[in-house]
Length: 128
Image (cartoon, rainbow, N blue to C red; front, side, top):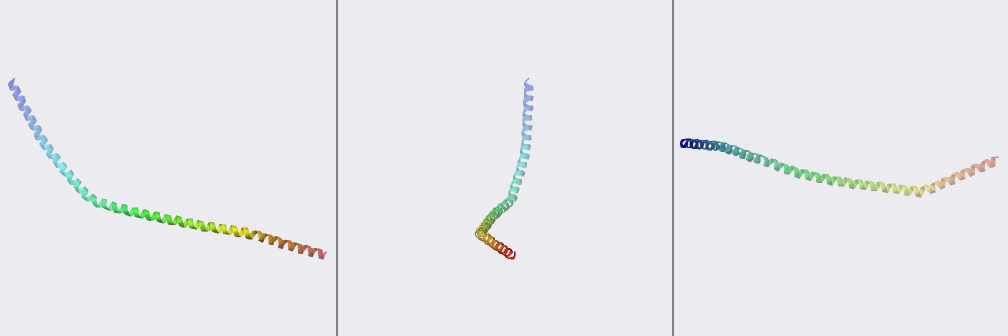
């Protein structure tokens, strides 16, 4: 039985040794893979910095353009408000003029019409 235990120990030690050798091989491959990943990440970082700087520049330009557009829209709104105010003033002036002139003109026209009717009636009576 002792021989069996010795053989089992030797087999167990061989298996553990094979497992250690396998783990060393796997860990060396993992190290190589991690080295490649680190190299790729470094390269990606190197290439992405100019892109990010360009994005920052573009973002600042877009912000500036949008502020200018906002300013221009405010100017247009103010101009439209001024035009509306002028148009309202013209309409108010037209109403005032119409109110002040329309009454006397209509009265004058009525008087002139009455005078002509009176003259016509007088002429018709004189002829008859």
